[in-house]
Length: 307
Image 1 (cartoon, rainbow, N blue to C red):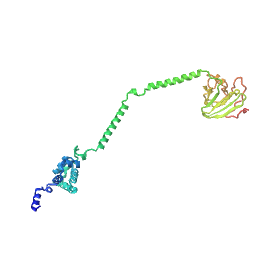
Image 2 (cartoon, rainbow, N blue to C red; image 1 turned 120 degrees about the vertical axis):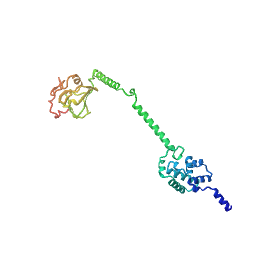
Image 3 (cartoon, one colour; image 1 turned 135 degrees about the vertical axis):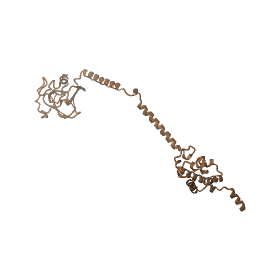
Image 4 (tube, helix red, strand yellow; image 1 turned 120 degrees about the horizontal axis):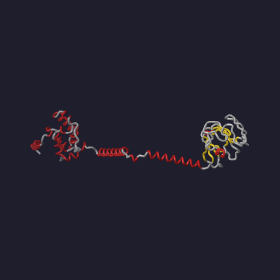
């Protein structure tokens, strides 16, 4: 090729360097045989933005940062030096368009055609999931808040059921009380608190002398001759005969002595008042029974032990 031919070719080529960075990028793209569509697909920059870059219309881009960034990406795709391109873009923007013109565009708007600014798939799915959770929470909250009154338990029905249960228990107790108590059953004393007791027979022989703690029991020997009781806490001694509860000897804190504690004597007391009945008061004895030794002050020395 002659020198004349080279000069002719140079004359035919446009002076892209003098025209600006946009024409240089366009020329580089055309030399590589790429179309705007292909560059947009490879850089993920919208065609409209690429066209503005090639035309040098940087003020039409969302902002100064986007203009420099898009231009560098474009330069890398078409094989130009990214640093040089970025410097030329900044220079053109500073010389030809004051920076305050780009300040108004910095906020920008969302461009659906710009893949770089499109929300990612994860963000979309996360937002959808959050909306579903919110809807479910509102549904259950409304269901509890606006639940019909029929779904709530009726206080009247609950009170009626409790009253019926109490009446049934009372009728059962009355029925048990109406049935005769088996006088041949064991006589058992159960302490409802700490209570000192002395059980002895008609001859004054001690059957048991101890302090019963709450829950302790003492069963009167069935073969004891005229067993009697001395205690200062008859109100803490529950009595059962054959497993059936009978009246306490007294419901008051008092000293009782020579109280017969056979099943017949306890049942014979019937509805008598507290402290009344056979041998309930201190010093009284069971009718027709052998005289017992006079009761000492509590606690007292034990009478003659049983042999």
